[in-house]
Image (cartoon, rainbow, N blue to C red; front, side):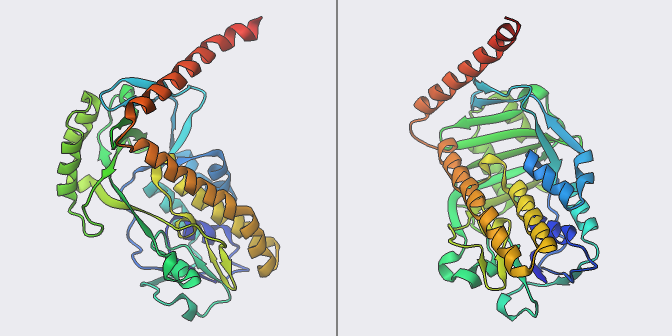
Length: 350
């Protein structure tokens, strides 16, 4: 089996397969690109997937987010996160380390795969991200990555006050602050930009981000004042086109190669883990053709659904017009949630 891409999806698939039964080769262009230890959300399904592939150790080093709010960029609270709706956050660096250790039996090949059809393997798995060469080979040039108008700038700074945690929405601008397990704070900023799409100067992007949110509340400005280019990444956001099938012959797509999405729901890493776990389980139980059919049936629609939902959320969060109506509607939602939480104990005791 040839797995093209050694990121979260590719490593998770290799980790979930029995090395006594499967001969796995991972092709990765840049095997040392762990990136910053930014925070990744792990929903229950993603946590189950991690356990399925044997990388549950990553869940021993997490932050449970039990506070936070959605606010306007100037700091006015719209919706407060219920304490019972905690989100599990893991460090990207630590997650990759655990997956890499579990996939140790896989053969590693460094280099870009230009022609997936030329790989000598019974099964070719495209786990090579938004710019997947495997997806293009499967569907043609119209299946190439799609560039959005948004730039994402993100990084790590020293720990910030718990009261600052949350997302801040402005007109065409989004800012977020979350803790990570490494005693640091993860931050991210997104807005429309003409920078890039490749070779973006990080220092210039960081200065640009500071200018874009210069009118933000003190919590946001404090984070950017503490940010440095050395601990910052800047990338244009790319998405994958809608796909009619994730499987063609001996080729299958998983992770961002199948459904690269805007990051606004925080589901990209988790969906990649679920893809890998479902495919690994199917291959372990079924003949390859049946396993691929099961994977296609189980994962195509859910993955594409989350991709669409994330794209819609990006347009709402980064809207440049109608923000007063948007914020008013969110404020009504926040008020209703607050009232329901305060009413719950009384109704329970009656």
